[in-house]
Image 1 (cartoon, rainbow, N blue to C red):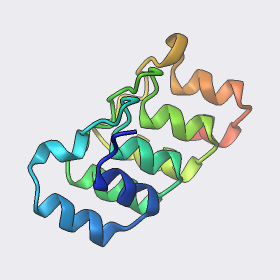
Image 2 (image 1 turned 60 degrees about the vertical axis):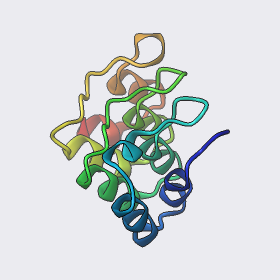
Image 3 (image 1 turned 45 degrees about the vertical axis):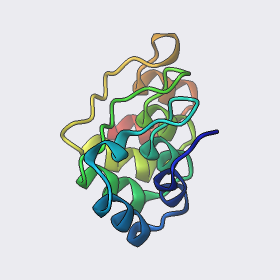
Image 4 (image 1 turned 30 degrees about the vertical axis):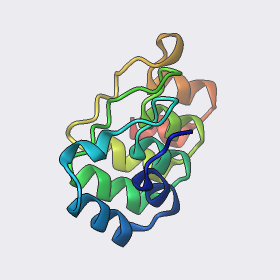
Length: 123
C-alpha cells in the first residue's frame, strides 16, 4: 500500500501524532499519496475522522486532489454518507465542491445517487 505514518494517524484520528509528524517533516508530507493516490486527507475522510480532517485542512492539506479512482475526499465523504466530514470539507475555502470525480460526477450527483438529502442541503 505504501502509506506514510501520517496516513495511518489520520485514519485513526490521532491528532497529536499528526502534529508531531508534520512538525518534523516538510509541507509535502500533507499531500503525499499512497499507491492508490490517496492522501492522508482521503484516509481521514474514508474513516469518518472529523478531527483529522479539520486538522489536516488547517495545516494546508489540498482537499481537491483526486485519487486513482478520480475521487477527492469530498466525493468519498458524500458517497459514504459521512455528512459531518462533508460539512467540514465544504466549509473550507479551498474545497472545490464542483470538482468532477469518477465518470464526471460531482459531489451533488453522488449525493443524489445515494439519496443523501442532508448532503444536498449542505451542498
